[in-house]
Image (cartoon, rainbow, N blue to C red):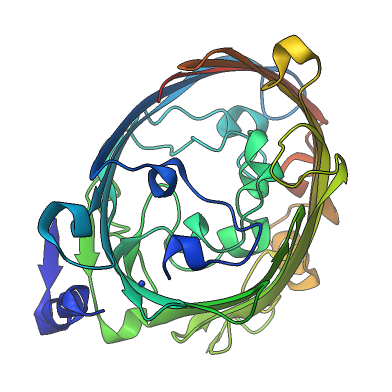
Length: 400
């Protein structure tokens, strides 16, 4: 890892400062396995393999194998060294860099473990400190999608847009601070009432080093600016609703026709997730669904708006109580400025790309899951020259 300038050193000093006690979060707030555990040190190793075939349409037919290795270490500093209310987390990843999207031509990353670059990276490394009974501060190398713009139901699906909306994922000079490249950040969180939670974060505007994509790099400079994001959640029983806003402080190139630079690259999103069948909020069995909508500044970004959602049924039979079946859609709409700029380059771009996905997750053992998956991609990349694509896949996860 490399760090430039005194700004990085000053930023890292915030790690020693005072982050929301997990047992004080609003009713219904999802907790990770690490937060529920009683061990001072929790280690998790998970290997994910993803075999995908483009059977028809897109750029060309073919089969690719993608993989992802996660290594996570969570530390309870209170239990370890008596540092009251503090937690530490380190997360490393490896990916083989294989791409299925190059065969399909899609813009929404139909495999959420695709990186296009073979690399081993430090993905997260942060410290979180409780502040009073209802607040927390987290600082370090941070994946904003670990807490912002997340739904539990969307995590079943393999397309990236159900992890974080395509409206946000497309932004920035090297993407926002999400998989697979993250940046330094400070995040604050506070409980706003029995069922309300507020969260804000300031992140380096350019994660990593775009000229050396395999490196874990921290480079802070004034021209990179910052990404500011805030979200308010309502959580009660089987309901989660959220509104978020984000914006960059740096200047960006405007799309056609002006091609000049300007400020104000920003957007907003909202989603609601609801248990539809099942009366107990603490029981995962039953039917759940979600719907999300987001808008990005059309002056700077190809995708002007995004709409996605789906349904997930958990516990198909008493003997398969952990299995899940899901159906979803993800629609990325291209802005007029972007379509006009592509026409100027001799291309014809449709209004939107839509991905329909059906997936089944079978928990074969506590340490093994298998996911057959089918995706139908309408207007891949918005390119009218490409036929709709049909992608089948089989994903497996080993570890815990």
